[in-house]
Image (cartoon, rainbow, N blue to C red; front, side, top):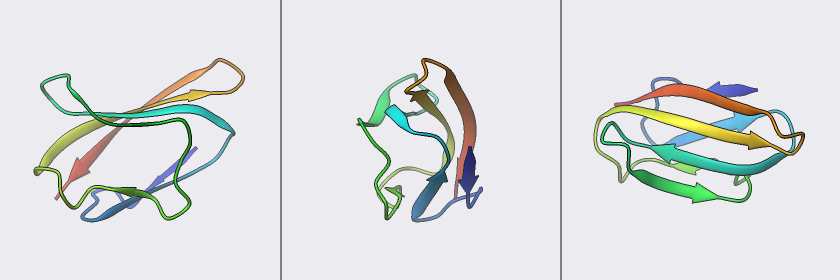
Length: 72
């Protein structure tokens, strides 16, 4: 899976495997975004606070990918 840009300002793009679920989690552990797919235009992050977020992706084969993303 590829996550870019990192750090991100507006749109987070994710490319890779077939996805079952995507979550964006802030430092407080709150889910600030959740979807059953990755939007083709990317995940809109311009309305989120500056900081570090976790992107959790459940792939259709059952595997889980977690990546830290910095929001500028």
